[in-house]
Image (cartoon, rainbow, N blue to C red; front, top):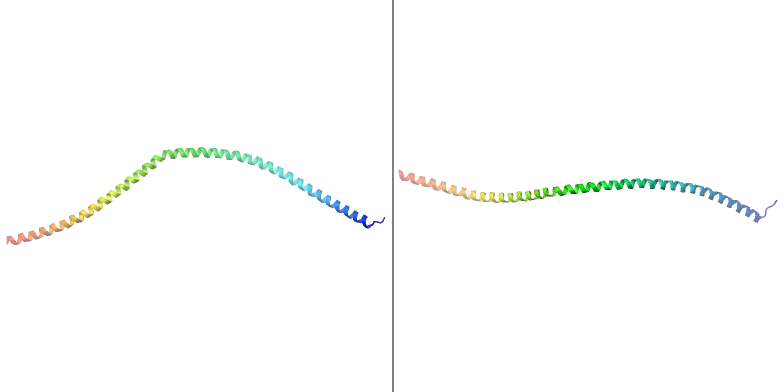
Length: 135
Protein backbone atom coordinates (compact mmCIF):
# COMPACT_ATOMS: atom_id res chain seq x y z
CA UNK A 1 0.00 0.00 0.00
CA UNK A 2 1.44 3.19 -1.12
CA UNK A 3 0.31 6.61 -0.11
CA UNK A 4 0.22 9.54 -2.33
CA UNK A 5 1.30 12.91 -1.12
CA UNK A 6 -2.32 14.00 -0.77
CA UNK A 7 -3.22 10.97 1.31
CA UNK A 8 -0.14 11.45 3.48
CA UNK A 9 -0.99 15.12 3.98
CA UNK A 10 -4.59 14.13 4.87
CA UNK A 11 -3.32 11.52 7.37
CA UNK A 12 -1.03 14.10 9.03
CA UNK A 13 -3.87 16.60 9.12
CA UNK A 14 -6.18 13.97 10.68
CA UNK A 15 -3.56 13.11 13.32
CA UNK A 16 -3.03 16.81 14.07
CA UNK A 17 -6.79 17.29 14.39
CA UNK A 18 -6.98 14.23 16.71
CA UNK A 19 -4.21 15.68 18.93
CA UNK A 20 -5.99 19.04 18.96
CA UNK A 21 -9.26 17.39 20.01
CA UNK A 22 -7.50 15.41 22.79
CA UNK A 23 -5.79 18.61 24.02
CA UNK A 24 -9.08 20.53 23.94
CA UNK A 25 -10.81 17.71 25.86
CA UNK A 26 -8.15 17.88 28.57
CA UNK A 27 -8.54 21.68 28.73
CA UNK A 28 -12.33 21.36 28.93
CA UNK A 29 -12.08 18.80 31.76
CA UNK A 30 -9.80 21.14 33.76
CA UNK A 31 -12.10 24.08 33.00
CA UNK A 32 -15.12 22.14 34.28
CA UNK A 33 -13.24 21.32 37.51
CA UNK A 34 -12.30 24.97 37.98
CA UNK A 35 -15.88 26.08 37.35
CA UNK A 36 -17.22 23.58 39.92
CA UNK A 37 -14.68 24.73 42.53
CA UNK A 38 -15.58 28.34 41.77
CA UNK A 39 -19.27 27.59 42.28
CA UNK A 40 -18.54 25.94 45.63
CA UNK A 41 -16.40 28.90 46.68
CA UNK A 42 -19.15 31.32 45.70
CA UNK A 43 -21.73 29.34 47.70
CA UNK A 44 -19.44 29.29 50.73
CA UNK A 45 -18.66 32.98 50.33
CA UNK A 46 -22.35 33.84 50.01
CA UNK A 47 -23.23 32.02 53.23
CA UNK A 48 -20.29 33.66 55.04
CA UNK A 49 -21.32 37.10 53.79
CA UNK A 50 -24.90 36.49 54.94
CA UNK A 51 -23.78 35.58 58.47
CA UNK A 52 -21.38 38.54 58.58
CA UNK A 53 -24.11 40.92 57.40
CA UNK A 54 -26.40 39.73 60.21
CA UNK A 55 -23.61 40.29 62.75
CA UNK A 56 -22.90 43.74 61.32
CA UNK A 57 -26.59 44.67 61.55
CA UNK A 58 -26.65 43.59 65.20
CA UNK A 59 -23.45 45.55 65.87
CA UNK A 60 -24.89 48.66 64.20
CA UNK A 61 -28.07 48.38 66.25
CA UNK A 62 -26.03 48.14 69.47
CA UNK A 63 -23.86 51.06 68.34
CA UNK A 64 -26.95 53.18 67.68
CA UNK A 65 -28.33 52.33 71.13
CA UNK A 66 -25.00 53.23 72.72
CA UNK A 67 -24.79 56.48 70.77
CA UNK A 68 -28.32 57.44 71.83
CA UNK A 69 -27.40 56.68 75.46
CA UNK A 70 -24.24 58.81 75.22
CA UNK A 71 -26.17 61.67 73.60
CA UNK A 72 -28.72 61.57 76.42
CA UNK A 73 -25.99 61.65 79.05
CA UNK A 74 -24.22 64.51 77.29
CA UNK A 75 -27.47 66.50 77.34
CA UNK A 76 -27.63 66.08 81.12
CA UNK A 77 -23.99 67.22 81.47
CA UNK A 78 -24.37 70.30 79.24
CA UNK A 79 -25.74 72.52 82.07
CA UNK A 80 -22.70 71.59 84.15
CA UNK A 81 -20.36 72.77 81.41
CA UNK A 82 -22.39 75.97 81.05
CA UNK A 83 -22.10 76.53 84.80
CA UNK A 84 -18.35 75.94 84.68
CA UNK A 85 -18.08 78.43 81.81
CA UNK A 86 -20.08 81.01 83.78
CA UNK A 87 -17.94 80.38 86.87
CA UNK A 88 -14.79 80.80 84.80
CA UNK A 89 -16.09 84.11 83.49
CA UNK A 90 -16.91 85.24 87.05
CA UNK A 91 -13.43 84.28 88.25
CA UNK A 92 -11.93 86.20 85.34
CA UNK A 93 -14.01 89.26 86.27
CA UNK A 94 -12.92 88.87 89.90
CA UNK A 95 -9.27 88.69 88.79
CA UNK A 96 -9.70 91.88 86.77
CA UNK A 97 -11.29 93.63 89.75
CA UNK A 98 -8.48 92.39 92.02
CA UNK A 99 -5.84 93.68 89.63
CA UNK A 100 -7.59 97.03 89.41
CA UNK A 101 -7.82 97.25 93.21
CA UNK A 102 -4.18 96.26 93.61
CA UNK A 103 -3.15 98.92 91.08
CA UNK A 104 -5.19 101.55 92.94
CA UNK A 105 -3.80 100.42 96.29
CA UNK A 106 -0.24 100.52 94.95
CA UNK A 107 -0.63 104.03 93.60
CA UNK A 108 -2.37 105.26 96.77
CA UNK A 109 0.22 103.55 98.99
CA UNK A 110 2.94 105.41 97.10
CA UNK A 111 1.08 108.63 97.78
CA UNK A 112 0.61 107.68 101.45
CA UNK A 113 4.28 106.78 101.70
CA UNK A 114 5.33 110.13 100.25
CA UNK A 115 2.89 111.89 102.56
CA UNK A 116 4.22 109.99 105.57
CA UNK A 117 7.81 110.88 104.69
CA UNK A 118 6.87 114.52 104.26
CA UNK A 119 4.95 114.46 107.55
CA UNK A 120 7.88 112.88 109.40
CA UNK A 121 10.27 115.48 107.98
CA UNK A 122 7.92 118.30 108.94
CA UNK A 123 7.49 116.83 112.41
CA UNK A 124 11.24 116.43 112.81
CA UNK A 125 11.92 120.04 111.77
CA UNK A 126 9.10 121.28 113.97
CA UNK A 127 10.50 119.40 116.97
CA UNK A 128 13.97 120.77 116.31
CA UNK A 129 12.58 124.27 115.92
CA UNK A 130 10.64 123.99 119.21
CA UNK A 131 13.66 122.50 120.93
CA UNK A 132 15.79 125.55 119.96
CA UNK A 133 13.14 127.93 121.32
CA UNK A 134 13.11 126.26 124.75
CA UNK A 135 16.85 126.82 125.38
